[in-house]
Image (cartoon, rainbow, N blue to C red; front, side):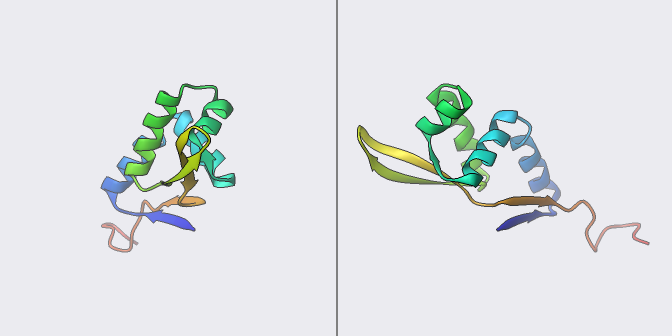
Amino acid sequence: MELVIDDPEKIYEISKALSTMTRINILQLVSIMPMSISELTENLNMSKGNISSHISELENLGLVEVEYQNGIKGIKKIIKAKYDKIVIVLKTSNSPNEP
């Protein structure tokens, strides 16, 4: 599924979210297969708190989905990519100065 963005405010918000390599890496990993916070922590060699804050940002923008599953030591978060492609459209059909 692809996300097509042409609204300037949404382009700005998505661009801000993708301005860190950590979030891009998270999106790439979870687009291959859903992963838990612990799995992302191991793959990216970062703390759970750091990964969780990045996940929250991506979730707030609707770029990932979070599911909760029973784990060995309680409930675990499973992160899934919502889109496999993000397309930013800079020129819309209503654009001024269109030829």
